[in-house]
Length: 250
Ligand code: SF4
Image 1: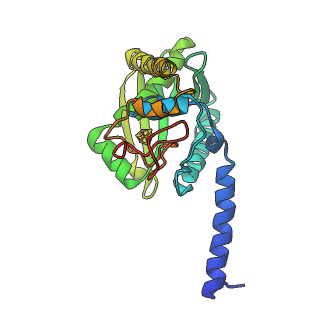
Image 2: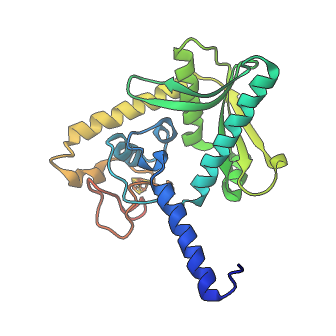
Image 3: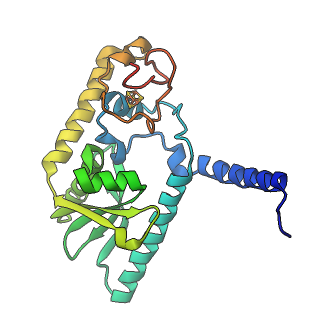
């Protein structure tokens, strides 16, 4: 049967989107409430503090499609590298290895290449983000993330020489893959962990449970992109225990 009546097509489109959105809302990443390595290096200290405190997100992040494509792409890549291990008859690639960075901070390293001692994180990026990384490098958030994974592996006694981001275009061709890499540097991870711990200490000092209005005193980052922040509550009052109006509004 062909759906060609406008109302039927738009009704079907709505039904399909509803199913996809409901599935995305129930996905493990959407339910994650503990800060992970991907957020620790975000330039906005207030956002890091919200995530470290496990505050319920008020910003759904908008359209879930990029994240669905990202998750599906990661699953496919994991199968591909496991299959390559099987073809080699040895475990060249450690795939989706759980890493313990500290006693309270854990994560999953996408890939580790035992031949080159390189920790690799896959990113499946839109055109603008890919262009920005090619032009300016990855920025603190991604850089800290891969260095933290490297730190976690090194804690286990695994040799880490380099960390890398494998940036695949979300639309386009595999030939558009861009790899950024630098030497593993534990000082980057240690600085980020010290900042995280300092933000925790500041939050306790401010006694945020008793004084939720003091969330506004936590340092933001004027240049931060608030759009993807789970605490972003545009058009609201000052930052409090539930959300933040954004860097420019604060
Ligand atoms: S909305 Fe913007 S300023 Fe507020 S916590 Fe999030 S990233 Fe920081």
